[in-house]
Length: 100
Image (cartoon, rainbow, N blue to C red; front, side):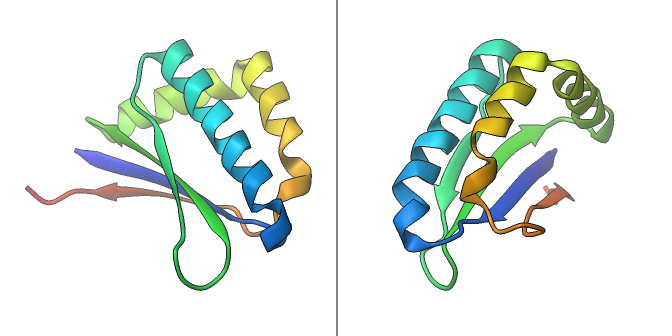
């Protein structure tokens, strides 16, 4: 089992409500389109951040879904709607192999 995480820092506290709405929209689209269970949360302490999470059975499964999403014009358009919410260069993606 692998846990995919993607985090991004929100520009400022005033943008947090819009960032949460955006994260909700991303999860709804991904879950409906790809039949997965993406979820998100907000960082409690420190900088305002949004974090998305999704489980994969394998690295190959993660890579295959990533390829599909790169070619998904509706998803790419949706991502563009949130571009002004984030601190440039703050996006981090990780794939963690979970220990049983």
